[in-house]
Amino acid sequence: MIPAVAVSALLLLSSPVVPAAATTATVDVARKHQRIDGFGFSEAFGRAEIMHGSQGLSAPKQREILDLLLSRTSGAGMSVLRLGIGSTAANSIQPADPGGPTATPRYVWDRDDESQVWLAQQAKAYGVNRFYANAWSAPGYMKTNGDEANGGSLCGLSGASCASGDWRRAYANYLVQYAKFYAQEGIRITDIGFTNEPDYTATYSSMRFTPAQAVEFTKVLGPIATGLKVACCDSFGWDQQAAYSKAIEADATARRIVATHAGHTYASPITGPLPTSRHTWMSEWSPNGTTWNENWDDGSGYDGFTIANAVHTALTTGNANGYVYWYGASVGATRGLIQMDGDGYHVSKRLWALANYSRFIRPDATRVGATTSNGALRLSAFRNADGSLAVVALNTGASASSVSYALRNSGISTGSATPYLTSATGSTTAQSPVRVASGTFTATVPARALITYRITP
Image (cartoon, rainbow, N blue to C red; front, side):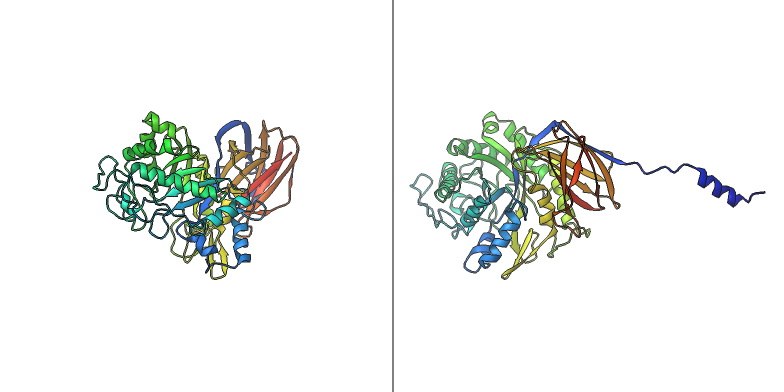
């Protein structure tokens, strides 16, 4: 008689071994989604001055940081620079009241703008041609509270009357003049924003607009800002921006004028597209955190993995055309991508998480269909104007995943897919190319890692 244990062992040996289901992924170039405007950052509130001013970093360190942010071969290859239009007495292009809204303007221009002119010129040399000039507030003398900070509204808007008069047109001219000054320095401002977080009162530069007031001012600015793409409204949260977008869409004139609907994700995250057919940007965000963090995946909520997830969500759930991070380089316990420290600096994995998108998904790329059988794999794909494909795979699972990719309607039957890895050990680091044959290739995505495949014929 065979012991029961032996019988169980025999049955186990004779039973077929069922392998784990292989992960498959399909990239279908015929399924077209949104066009991409670019990825960017800001150095507003004097951050460019910290980098370049008289007390700034040495020239070699400046160049190293610029390479990290802007180089398409060794850095993030950012393609959008967001500029802050100053409103304080120290940084405004019209620091003093000229004598009322109809008085002849008294503009001043120092050709520096807290080193933002230098930064814009440097960015242009790297190939950046998308410059978004954004105002946090009008100068205080144009506002109901007489202060460029602490909220208040623009005099002349509905419900915002002032003894000094109606400053709406003067403010519109002020914004356009800022763009003209940059043109004198060889920088063409492409996008103009008249408000930042109009639904939030900050102790620093801030100004309130209701959705109806934003529509009202849009119709003042539009005819003056010829040649500029008007953006609105950089709301404090994505859900909150929806209210501004709905108001704009409901007005035929405003709908025609506003080229870009921009929202932040501090007050609420992205859970779907904004209610507009126009281009949309996630135009500012950095995660909460009270200490400097360089880690890739530590569960803190402000590591690199968090940023990779946020960018993926913006592109695939929000159908965003652009993604603009907050600070590129800052100081102290910053949530920026780089921390400047004396004449040195530290680099966060947040930079490389963004680089896996920004370096390889270029302006005018189109997001295309990307599906996978693996629920832990967050997949997106993009066709660049040069014909190359960028396939981005973020493995949120605890184990590595071997993935078989099928490229449909791509025109690429043979070629190579070069993986770029960001993880605890990689920083957009090139791996050995993978051969593409018959429109397919197979590669492994390590656990809790981000890989971008640049695929060329």
